[in-house]
Image (cartoon, rainbow, N blue to C red; front, side):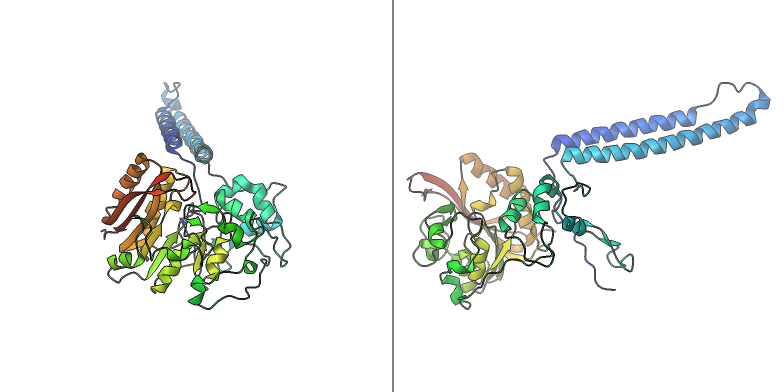
Length: 422
């Protein structure tokens, strides 16, 4: 029998903040238990009043047994009903739902993909599963119309040019998306340079997709500040992009050689979060360190540009659990892109997931993290202290805002080392 794998706990189920909701569910469950026990007490202590004559005792005894049997059946039905009601209430309170395939506007391809497929030889002895279940984000239920639009296409035909629709679904928490049975639009990649020359060679406008974007060439993108990490970041020749990590502009800027020296030669693979156009991974590649760059195509074709440089782009939102095994990376690099939406709960979950994929002794490089205020810096410090990291570098300094306003902003740069844990 072929190998069957099942991925559990990969973050596909999402939940709303549930502190109050969880308390409500716990109270309901407690009341259910109390009610059930009262039913049981009533059933087993009940006896009919008309039992004064001895000749009626056998009949009364039989009647008692019948009554107890009926009460037990009633209790079991009540328990089953209560459990179903509680499960439904918990789903509603926590915001967890499934996709209703009975809706008239659901695409047939979506229905087919979401069907449970029984294994042909029954239960698999190694995994214990009996069927294959599609992996789709449960939050997709809240964007069913968009999801059905995404799954509307001609089977074995060309896919619609709708990558921006797919990204919109991902940003709404509908991740992972269902697979499709159509051919993605392909663009000729003529003129790609061989590695390692590709790391700093300009990328042609003609080998990337511009549909769904405001700019239609890299010159347009280089005239804009797309994020704190990407201002002119697609210009690999004339901008400051080719100076990053090898020359410093402020005290917050660490050199790659200095950080690698802290790893005592043990840095081989790394993970870069919100890596802009991939320059960190490019500089690391020059040091024989393989870095995966996490990105989305927000306002620019980041993934295609990074791939054209010969670097590995990972198209994944930060809401998704990182698809790596525990303790695999020697280095994790992140900047202000780590702070998703400025919500402390999200940052908390992300940091624990980053800690999971980083090996003991590995380095966490926090690079120019923007601190909007002193409280933000303190909150981040408290969060990092939870992990017991060894502080190897720590610099808090002001930098002039790159927008030209002349306003100073506070940034934190630091390098930490993950300790071994029992």
